[in-house]
Image (cartoon, rainbow, N blue to C red):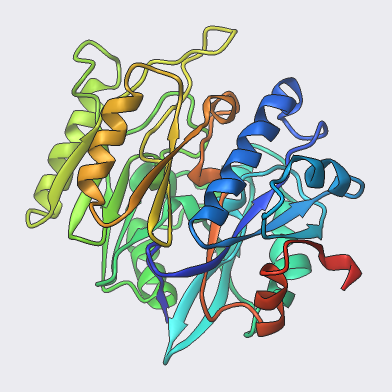
Length: 349
């Protein structure tokens, strides 16, 4: 089996709708506006949305969606909305696509994730053509980035947290990722971390592949005196050494703090590739325009679509963190048909 790169054609994106019982309570209205804009951008990119939601939220959701939205509403129980880290990955073997999950424990037992860890088996796997493959180690989707040649990127800081898999060594991780995700090469990056990041340095906040043999890196070159400058600068140099044949695209770093004065981990690298679009976070900051220009250069064959994610970063995550793509030929044909029928309650089918 091999993990499918994000730029493969997709049928749907998984999201989980925020509610007042999640950590979004203080910003709930603003976050719902962001989710609505994100759903519109996903639909415009030719993908539907599988929207997990709690009981009783479907009417509120329907009021917020555009008339031409394609959304399958799936009633579910979950702890929070960071679908990137608990929704299944998709791997391919002999032309067949399989949903594949790791265990999820709230980024090293930082938060209760018992409901999140059941989402695939209870709600998402039944929508798929093939049975769910479960890998019995802790890992998150945001920790993994792969290209079409099977080169997988991840970070040492994340893997080395003993609250994930005890004394599991980096060599053991490498062998596991090669065996279960079909990686031909695994690069475990040592440098780079954003203050306030609960994930211990997920790769999707730091380094992303492009289809044209490029690397988009969350840099800090625009803020020479920033506390992140040394670590992110070392990350750029590490990537240049590890992938010398790749073009490097450096994103600027914004400076955002919350009401308590805490630095927020706002990363422009936390974007979603969705068919022929790159749906990217902006934060109402002076760096937004430069970040968009970098992405235009990095993805010349894609439309660059900004979504205001300032509300998302208040909870220390961003756009990629709340999404998970499902490539074509993964879902059952009847589910794909439902996804094209507007806004549909799956429970009523």
